[in-house]
Length: 127
Image 1 (cartoon, rainbow, N blue to C red):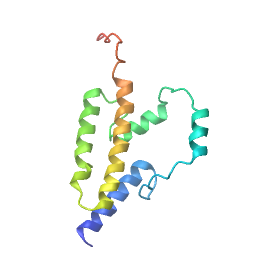
Image 2: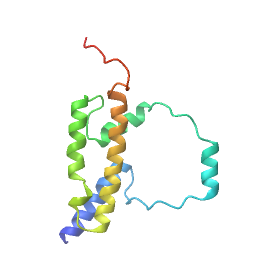
Image 3: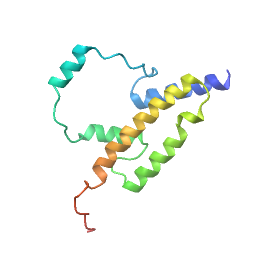
Image 4: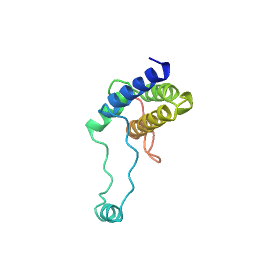
């Protein structure tokens, strides 16, 4: 088996494990007018992330639940280097790596929302 094929299989397995499926990400579909109108009418106010989503975000960053801010930043940087699309030659590999990097970024932002104090809040005092 060629190196490129092995890399492709490995990337598909990584994305599948992180996204909960064994298939590569599908391209985005065109949004119809009824979809746009319906989503605008039914838009719910933003809610704080629930516990399950937060646990999945920590797992995507390969960290134990409740890791500190320094660990989260280090893990994100390490994974971003590993899965950066510029490290891959083929278009398919780049597409998979791009999707995975987007998911990692979303998980990172979700965890940061919880760990960093809101802008304007007084910093918490150590106990």
